[in-house]
Length: 317
Image 1 (tube, rainbow, N blue to C red):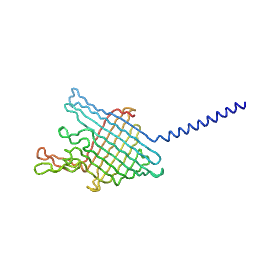
Image 2: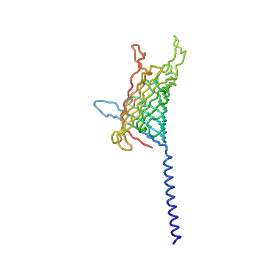
Image 3: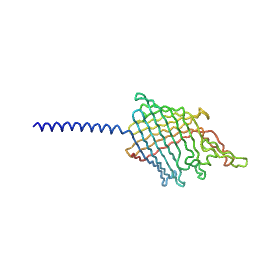
Image 4: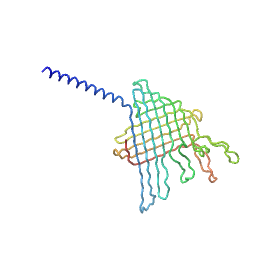
């Protein structure tokens, strides 16, 4: 009888120890999960067809592909988030060739560190890079590209402070020292002084005596705001605002990049998107036609605005 009781006691002790080990293992596994990855791919399609329509109209179809990938690391007082985003859209109308409507490649990374868990202020560093995939044209002219891959390309790199109580959803960033590089690696566009780079210099006979610059360097102040929230059930809002001014060239003239997107979720795979994108860059001048044929006059910068509405499918992985 004593032997049986001893065996039962030993089994009970081993069982308790095993549970403690398992609990410790679970805690350790949970503690080591510091990375969070999110990937979303979507395709929006819009189509219009007319058959014997008395009021007339042109058949058209457009498609927009977008891919959003983010990787976040968070541990104690350190947070690091990197995002890659691509968008490419085309449109085909009856009796017209295929035209590009969207073209964007963006990479960004932000790292922040706070002194303790009681504060919502982070010492932060931010990197952002933007360019496009293919040639852009001033349609219907397809012979002379007005933009290409890395023409332009924009890079921001700076340090500052960032505030965010729930920093994954709402963040304000201020940097008193941010480098902005504008890259125009197509020499034809660089010679024309596109996107604010120094243009080529020509002699009286039209011979080029100095190439246009391929890089424009600026140093200034950057302020950004990122905000995401669920307004209502199945309605998601995303707001991104960037304000930049250069210390040495027209300080106070602010470059604006503001994107506002509403996602209307139908189910796990179908959604509608309403987006607005407003930009103003003091370095990008506009060309206005003159009275002389094929001659243009350079005017000041103008506000650029784009609005899009689409319905499509989305997949998370």
